[in-house]
Length: 261
Image: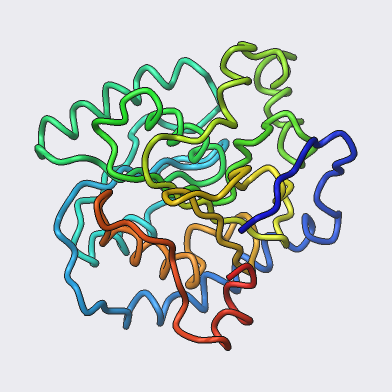
């Protein structure tokens, strides 16, 4: 189990080293993921249920193309969010609720929601607002525990929002963000994340339906990191009635790919 974090008062931004090496590390992770995405196969074929994929801060659907293609090839219906760049606008949640309802009505099935970075913060809110429509949530480096904690992205938000700071958002929303969603949730995080502090990307307490999984890699590369893709493929096979924590195949895999397991 992940230990409880009492407060973030002494937290600092991810190190300059991890930040400046983000692009290079992500490029390497992408290269390594190509053969994995090409050759990967599962013993169980996907059941075809819908999967909504939400991009990170200032990213668009283009950033999740490889991830959505991977999900499609594993036997699911992958949906882009189709809302342009994710600029961190709270109002976008209303449009996402409509999107979620449309997908459910179109397919007649609950929707799994995968959110990268800020997209994961939104994914959890969708599951809290309409849990009857959400099958499960998977977050990738998403700072839902405290989006106002020191990070290397808030200055961009402050710039494009005309000076409105993250901490100036609706206090009620800020209070609700850390609360767990009432559906199976997997929070993927990396201690080598150069954008957001890993401590705010995990559930405060792991439960029978809430798991934190550490991987090795960059923030920018989480959407195509081979270790992350394996987690996603494994999780998507599960429903609420048979959901169980993710387990790796062996000790070596634990050490190399999933240090927290």
